[in-house]
Length: 400
Image (cartoon, helix red, strand yellow):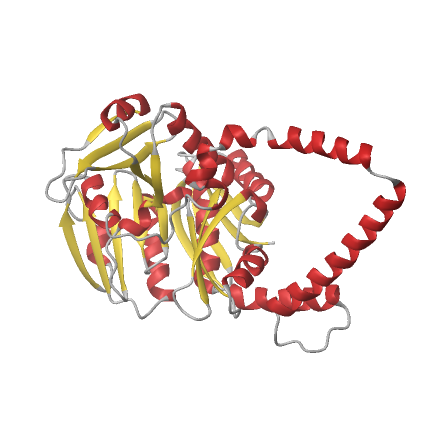
């Protein structure tokens, strides 16, 4: 029976991984170690890699276009206002199970490349990479939650979910239930006994004891098809194997260009440029017609394209996406500052309100600057008062 290896990256900075070997009947005990340890265990067997939920942003956007090529062209514009950094810095994988809704997994390209390079340098062959979020069980109108030490993995839709800090989990669940009244059930898996916040959640809930996280995720990983395999595009297996060969492409292009310039003439070059310009104008017109077939009268392509992209953006932003995006960006900053104690979180009219306690006022100002500079958010300190436990501050955070 063919064996498979499921690996889970648990600490990218220290290159710590967990893995287990499975076949059609049994699976091995969970092993943990460095990439070198995994390389020895895997040998020539290709592995399936699960990336941390907090590293991958799962989104849903409405794109009323027909073909896959149209989605590929319109998607970056639709996601522009939903991502913390420039859309070009993300690797995007998308799936459209219904007519207009497109589900997207977005991960920083540099982080993904560094991760894959580390495995390649250790001599490990990877055949697929998935968000661990989508390995949780899915049931319509229900949420699945795995609590792994200080981290929580949440799946609140067939293709939606994410990773957050356990401290903000009760507040986030309360807001999620408020925004999605159709949710009726909560399934929780963790090693410990249920906490008080779980007992207070006002929906049907079940708590399951969990011996180890990876075997639980492995059961969901084997059910995944090709959807949301991050090894696509420039990160496809063929492209990854040919990476060193591709490094010579710029040099080859320069040499080829020099040869063409030597054998060309001014007349040929002039004719070539005019021919290319005419072809580019023709392709631009065809591309516009394919992307927006409903427009029959074309007067100014640039102006009309900007108008259509603006309309697409209006359809792409939803309350749930706004809340999950702000929560992802703010939680990433709070996670790096353990001295902060979150007291309350509210989300009203696309505005996130935080009440937290810090050691001193300088920490509040530093958090404000980080959110505004790195995540391009608008942060307003409503109040900051010294108390017996530190400085209690009220902040309002929104997209610029």
